Length: 78
Image (cartoon, rainbow, N blue to C red; front, side, top):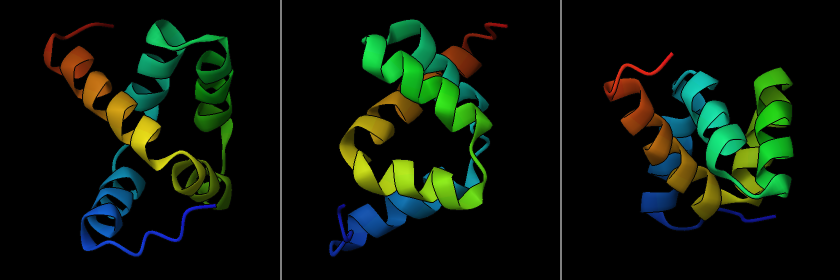
């Protein structure tokens, strides 16, 4: 598990934890490999502690899908 020693990573974790999970999970489910599709389903169902675990375990990937989710949200996809 990543300890997020870097200030930028801490900031990303805070952003991920404060953001609704819907768009990140949707991007994972629509655009990810089978693994990340399943992780998107898990993220959508996760409680606070498990969301934190997912974000801390795959920080770069979650940040990437968060960005992709923001694009989906901006495009107004439903």
